[in-house]
Length: 146
Image (cartoon, rainbow, N blue to C red):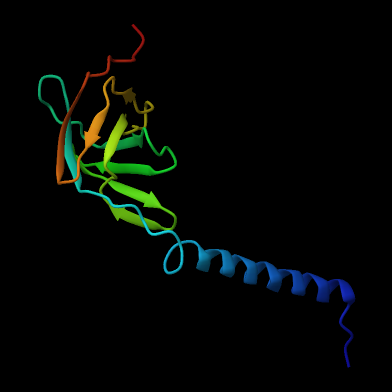
Protein backbone atom coordinates (compact mmCIF):
# COMPACT_ATOMS: atom_id res chain seq x y z
CA UNK A 1 0.00 0.00 0.00
CA UNK A 2 1.99 2.97 1.23
CA UNK A 3 5.22 3.19 3.11
CA UNK A 4 5.76 5.39 6.17
CA UNK A 5 9.18 6.94 6.18
CA UNK A 6 11.15 6.60 9.43
CA UNK A 7 11.79 10.37 9.59
CA UNK A 8 8.04 11.09 9.53
CA UNK A 9 7.37 8.49 12.23
CA UNK A 10 10.07 10.04 14.39
CA UNK A 11 8.62 13.58 13.95
CA UNK A 12 5.13 12.40 14.86
CA UNK A 13 6.46 10.55 17.91
CA UNK A 14 8.41 13.61 19.04
CA UNK A 15 5.31 15.79 18.57
CA UNK A 16 3.18 13.45 20.67
CA UNK A 17 5.90 13.27 23.34
CA UNK A 18 6.16 17.09 23.45
CA UNK A 19 2.37 17.45 23.78
CA UNK A 20 2.29 14.85 26.55
CA UNK A 21 5.13 16.59 28.41
CA UNK A 22 3.39 19.98 28.08
CA UNK A 23 0.19 18.48 29.50
CA UNK A 24 2.08 16.95 32.44
CA UNK A 25 3.80 20.25 33.24
CA UNK A 26 0.53 22.19 33.00
CA UNK A 27 -1.27 19.65 35.18
CA UNK A 28 1.43 19.98 37.83
CA UNK A 29 1.44 23.81 37.93
CA UNK A 30 -1.28 24.79 40.32
CA UNK A 31 -4.59 23.25 41.10
CA UNK A 32 -4.47 20.12 43.24
CA UNK A 33 -1.19 18.79 44.54
CA UNK A 34 0.82 22.00 43.92
CA UNK A 35 1.83 24.75 46.28
CA UNK A 36 -1.29 26.45 47.60
CA UNK A 37 -1.82 30.02 46.40
CA UNK A 38 -0.82 32.84 48.75
CA UNK A 39 -3.46 34.60 50.85
CA UNK A 40 -4.50 37.85 49.19
CA UNK A 41 -6.54 40.85 50.35
CA UNK A 42 -8.73 43.15 48.30
CA UNK A 43 -6.93 46.26 47.03
CA UNK A 44 -8.75 49.10 45.28
CA UNK A 45 -8.00 52.75 44.80
CA UNK A 46 -7.98 55.78 42.59
CA UNK A 47 -5.12 57.42 40.70
CA UNK A 48 -5.37 61.14 40.22
CA UNK A 49 -3.18 64.05 39.22
CA UNK A 50 -2.20 66.74 41.71
CA UNK A 51 -5.14 69.09 41.66
CA UNK A 52 -7.70 66.29 41.77
CA UNK A 53 -8.30 65.24 38.14
CA UNK A 54 -8.46 61.43 37.75
CA UNK A 55 -5.92 59.67 35.54
CA UNK A 56 -8.03 58.57 32.54
CA UNK A 57 -6.79 55.01 32.05
CA UNK A 58 -3.54 53.13 32.35
CA UNK A 59 -2.01 50.35 34.43
CA UNK A 60 -0.82 50.22 38.02
CA UNK A 61 1.67 47.67 39.30
CA UNK A 62 2.49 46.79 42.90
CA UNK A 63 5.89 45.05 43.23
CA UNK A 64 6.27 43.10 46.48
CA UNK A 65 9.39 43.89 48.48
CA UNK A 66 9.36 40.44 50.09
CA UNK A 67 8.46 38.31 47.02
CA UNK A 68 9.38 40.01 43.73
CA UNK A 69 8.28 36.90 41.80
CA UNK A 70 4.61 37.81 42.36
CA UNK A 71 3.10 40.10 39.74
CA UNK A 72 0.33 42.30 41.11
CA UNK A 73 -1.37 44.75 38.78
CA UNK A 74 -4.60 46.48 37.89
CA UNK A 75 -6.11 48.31 34.96
CA UNK A 76 -6.92 51.95 35.67
CA UNK A 77 -10.38 52.93 34.46
CA UNK A 78 -11.30 56.19 32.73
CA UNK A 79 -12.39 57.52 36.15
CA UNK A 80 -8.97 56.69 37.71
CA UNK A 81 -10.18 53.70 39.73
CA UNK A 82 -8.38 50.38 39.91
CA UNK A 83 -8.63 46.95 41.52
CA UNK A 84 -5.55 44.73 41.86
CA UNK A 85 -5.10 41.08 40.88
CA UNK A 86 -2.11 38.88 41.64
CA UNK A 87 -0.86 36.52 38.95
CA UNK A 88 0.15 33.23 40.58
CA UNK A 89 1.10 30.27 38.40
CA UNK A 90 -1.88 29.96 36.03
CA UNK A 91 -4.37 31.79 38.26
CA UNK A 92 -5.51 35.37 38.82
CA UNK A 93 -6.10 36.00 42.53
CA UNK A 94 -8.18 38.96 43.63
CA UNK A 95 -6.10 41.51 45.53
CA UNK A 96 -2.52 41.41 46.79
CA UNK A 97 -0.54 39.63 49.47
CA UNK A 98 0.08 41.35 52.80
CA UNK A 99 3.24 43.45 52.92
CA UNK A 100 5.11 46.41 51.47
CA UNK A 101 5.06 47.28 47.77
CA UNK A 102 6.83 49.59 45.35
CA UNK A 103 4.20 51.17 43.09
CA UNK A 104 4.50 52.07 39.40
CA UNK A 105 1.80 53.86 37.39
CA UNK A 106 1.80 53.76 33.58
CA UNK A 107 -0.50 56.11 31.68
CA UNK A 108 -2.24 55.09 28.48
CA UNK A 109 -0.40 55.47 25.23
CA UNK A 110 -1.98 57.66 22.61
CA UNK A 111 -1.58 57.57 18.86
CA UNK A 112 0.85 60.47 19.03
CA UNK A 113 2.95 59.74 22.14
CA UNK A 114 4.03 56.93 24.46
CA UNK A 115 2.59 56.66 27.94
CA UNK A 116 4.31 58.15 30.98
CA UNK A 117 5.75 55.99 33.76
CA UNK A 118 5.67 57.13 37.38
CA UNK A 119 7.58 55.23 40.07
CA UNK A 120 6.21 56.41 43.37
CA UNK A 121 8.79 57.44 45.99
CA UNK A 122 7.25 55.72 48.99
CA UNK A 123 6.21 52.12 49.63
CA UNK A 124 2.54 51.22 50.11
CA UNK A 125 1.51 48.64 52.73
CA UNK A 126 -1.21 46.08 52.03
CA UNK A 127 -2.78 44.90 55.29
CA UNK A 128 -4.82 41.80 56.11
CA UNK A 129 -8.11 43.57 55.34
CA UNK A 130 -9.78 45.45 52.46
CA UNK A 131 -7.35 48.16 51.34
CA UNK A 132 -8.07 51.44 49.54
CA UNK A 133 -5.25 53.64 48.19
CA UNK A 134 -5.69 57.14 46.79
CA UNK A 135 -2.59 57.63 44.62
CA UNK A 136 -1.51 61.08 43.52
CA UNK A 137 0.89 61.64 40.62
CA UNK A 138 2.36 64.72 38.94
CA UNK A 139 0.76 65.89 35.73
CA UNK A 140 3.28 65.17 32.94
CA UNK A 141 4.73 68.09 31.06
CA UNK A 142 3.71 68.55 27.46
CA UNK A 143 6.33 66.87 25.24
CA UNK A 144 5.65 68.94 22.16
CA UNK A 145 8.66 70.77 20.75
CA UNK A 146 8.53 74.57 20.90
